[in-house]
Image (tube, rainbow, N blue to C red):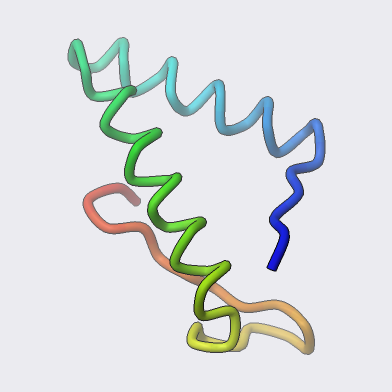
Length: 65
């Protein structure tokens, strides 16, 4: 499965990394790492997550809301 981020989603991810980095040094890097591993899980098991609406599923990241 190929994962593609819309420009808006990429900007939101970058903003979240910056936010967490301001909270504690290194936390933004940890957040980005957890996000990447979550994206890999979704790509590997695309139907494993809770269905929210038709063709929309939710996967919760570990350690971050």
